[in-house]
Length: 406
Image (tube, rainbow, N blue to C red):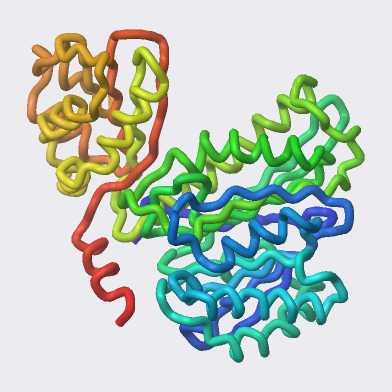
């Protein structure tokens, strides 16, 4: 089940990036479950990772490798997270990097590993290692669609986005894929996200930019409030577009690039929400006129995480008292309950902290029925705001997660 229809876009290759894939049979036979990105020499590569203290072995190794070497290859496997696997898990991640390094002739620290899937089980390392030569051979034929399919776990469809852009005669391109459907409450980025552009940009600036844009996209989505052990989002800039290297973000070109990057990362983030496990609704929660952005963020996430609100959304039940109660318990000290307003899909539900005189159950039912729902909370206190995207909570979500390992 997923919200709305989605077709994977046609994504041309990004100059300086090649993609390979293989079928290792890690969890299922006859499906792509290994993806390899090759990045040209001289490219900038930035990454943000999970803040979960039980981070997976590949996350630890990625951080280690990025400190000592430029990144040339990104290796992803699905079907097994290699998390909660102790010293053996780290050795398995190193073995994968060593194997790719030997096949392509680079140092092992130039290879970044990523894994996604079941936590607490060791990688079927022999299956994985035996598939790597196939992934390398496929670097000449792999596509972004192969990458999108190859990183899926409980996703029902691959997620991709593409922009072909021009600013004052300077052309550039951005492409990306993401995966995620459950255990989604990123605390840095997303479950897995890989974005590439041919823009030339300073390595340090790219890292700062990725963190900022992740906070406006992947860090503003939630399905079930669970931060994964494996969250990773990578941004590659190959420098092949021919622009003067971006050293700051003050130019018109730089600002336009940031707009397009933000747009594509939000599209990929929204695609995760729309494909949330058991999702039937795509829900935008916006809090406006707060005294501080953090107040708006806290209330928005509190609403998006509430099981009572999410089940009401699934039932299209305009039980607005649940939303009102969440606003009150979000811990915002500046809150004045007598100023709060609530709209659902444009229908005024609450005015001045009480039921709106114009509200009726019929209007509420109509507002809660569509696939796309916007909940807008007006605190009437200041000029700050924030937005979070989430889903409803259905019977199917429980079924999927109860039966995940069986």
